[in-house]
Image (tube, rainbow, N blue to C red; front, top):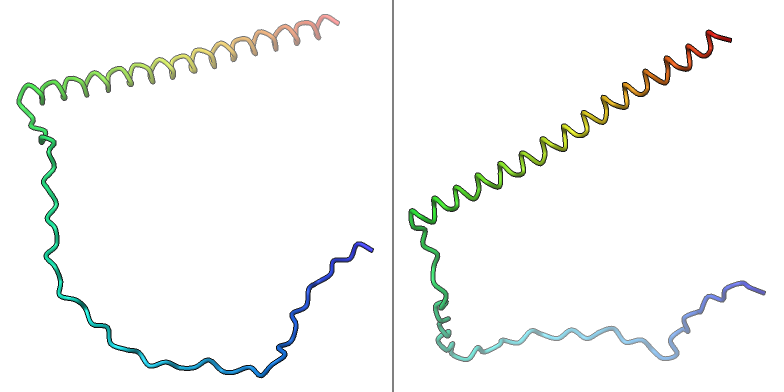
Length: 103
């Protein structure tokens, strides 16, 4: 009832002719026209003056210092959290063992 039906390809009814072979022909190229020259870009080139170099170095240094401070503060926050969790675990463990000794 729910079996798929695979379509069948019908057999050719006439005589099948083999493909004909055509000889390659020569292609005649028209004389080449001179290629158009692309115009030079109109935007100015960037020139680094000594003041611009100092500004770039100062900006890069500021970025490195800010990113470093953020990463160090995140590492410090993780370390403080881990230490406080360890202290809490020791206190809870000592409370549980003290309660077990009283019984």
